[in-house]
Length: 360
Image (cartoon, rainbow, N blue to C red; front, side, top):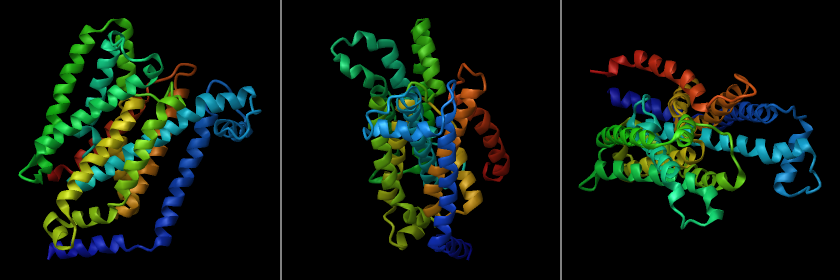
């Protein structure tokens, strides 16, 4: 009886009119656009609104004569930073929503499966030992740090998946527990690298592990943006399957959902989006936890709303946190991870209190 009621609830939510879905997502998109514009205008140098369009044309090559100081700042410094924030926020938000849908637990975060800590370890390996890899061509050096971070994240993802995959089935509980173990191993290895580092390397590791959108350049961020765009699109295609999975794995199978393939996709694709984000921004915590839960509170549990809504709210949260990071101690800049942790940690405590009935 309870399963039947829950099933009807899920289908009621998933059959909302397209008009309501479009309206809700349009509101979020409008707020995200306002956050984007404010983020471009925020900084030690005042930028007129007209410079945004000029800088965009300069970036796209449509107006090579637009070389004023303001448009150059927009094109070279602020647009890469803001677009990185858009893709990082969307990646963390949609990854968190997908993983929470898979685990059917609002306390799940992309960092729990070891992807973020794996990326931190990969980046730290490059920071400590990169200077000894003299065979890497000079023009590829700009990609070296994000590539090592991405490979570290992928390695952690493969380990989690292999541990959780047995006899043709994926054990969600085993993957979650293995992610916790890999986080501990990566933290120990990272601590050892910190012990080995000199002062300059230590500052680089600390700055990277705390997360930042500073220093973004187009050549470094576009490969990650491409990975995020493709993987996020594939996640969105599984929104209906996640609605079915929310009913229960057995019932979802009876309704035509291939749950084994769904679980594989919902581990690999969110891990790839998180790895791509972490590889260029460092570790930015709690976005993947906070955004999906707030969207569920506002819009319900239909994943056709939750997935794109979480991506848009992730963009809003990251851009807003980045604005605060730039103005809080201006002209200096706080690491972005400090701001998101100050917001996310109390929210996580609130979730623990609210859902303490789930715990033994």
